Length: 632
Image (cartoon, rainbow, N blue to C red; front, side, top):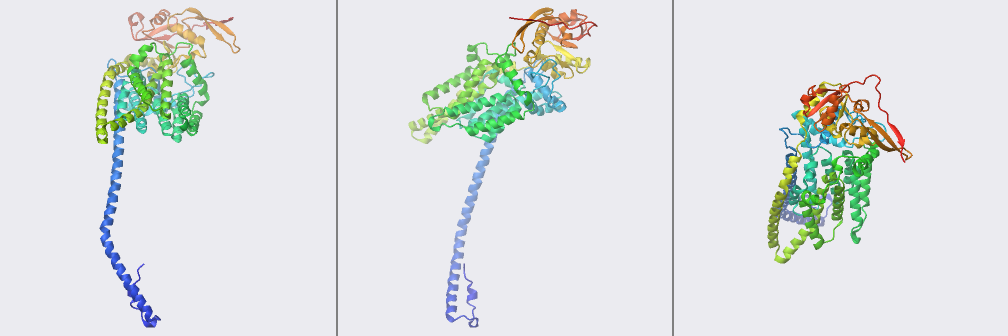
């Protein structure tokens, strides 16, 4: 701190200071003045330099900030391009017109669209009156919606489509395309975070996945969001994010109740891979497993239909899926030919898988935890796909992701070998660039040759197979000529979604899944099968067991009038596949009257749909009895 020398020079003798004090203070003041002068001069010399340092620091900070913004913009563009491309691909698949009308593929798509459309009016329904003889629980008439979260997710698309087009079908196409694009972006996110080389090329290889993978993702079902959530589970496990893992596990249960089974399978595969890791790094992932269990449990407990969840899943998984005892939907059946599956359906995917797997196991190194985890998922879902073809909607993406992660050391080994052979990093980089370009060209050609026939097949197969104008006209007539809640007898259990979409005013007999009727009322299901196939009148027998395990044989006398007496139907709708039943109804004037499209059966028997009104029963008519006898 400098002394104020002006004050020191103004000291007077009367202030009590001696001559020696004044001389000492003068010397100190002079030294301070010289120091201050040198300080000021040095500051003048150093100020430009210091300003330059500050300027350079500011410039460096700005450069870093600009670089970060550039990387963020590049990342945004990469994911944006991936999203738009995937959206366009799926829209191309699901927009094939039929007779000039673009619908949505699949039967169940219409059910989900209607349930989403009805959400503001009915909310989360506890009973399902639209199906009179479908039972979703062991007892009572309680409903379990295992897609309620998907219906909520679907609603914005349905509402926008209704507002813009007056119909919800376009919203279904927008929704499945959006869900597929999100799944592709999550796939890309995993590749980038796992540092998989040439990630865009792996995106191209998505286009060679089996055509049935794309077909099923074109259905307006929870397939797309469910796969996206499963990919998020994988991402959280690979990145070791327990909190996010718990959140995804809980939300998955609400989005689609099938996640009750899928989440433990995925987390269990990761735990098994951790236990089987090399000894020096082997460690059970207690934190991740505990977080997943907590999120999964909270998601299950807070599910709106939790009280009927267990019995419903038991019926769906075992009664319909893994061990059906009646004819169920084709999606639960295995593929007919192994050779067809290996060559025509999954040939390109299996070729890429085998090439990378052989190279990896030949060149090494040993699989790490993440690679082993994805290999377990790959093989596990492959087995499920061979058991039930519906799992083709999940397995191919798991397979490609597994192969992509296994390929990482192969590219690293190639890079090290190139540097060793060439001896110069710049030359090796040039060689790597040439090989990358060549590999890109090869992948594009391979994808084009292998994928183009598949893309056309997917587009043609994804066209709506129903005559929507004829169905719409039929349902408009039915709504105008029937009372609300009157029951319609349909000739196929899978007709319900389509009719329900166009007419929620009336009720129907069976639908959604044959086990929903057969499990509780096997006698009623047997009557339905025989009636719809035009085999009544007929006498048949049906085995059953009571609570004590004793076996009985029920004798069933099935008559055409059971449509009225057992199913309490007011209307019957037949199509071109059930002409035998239509002829029986047209002949039985006491039971039914043809009302659409004409009243003369001979003139309109070739029409796409016929509507019969069931006449009231005469006084004295009674239901046929069911006789039982014990069976040894």
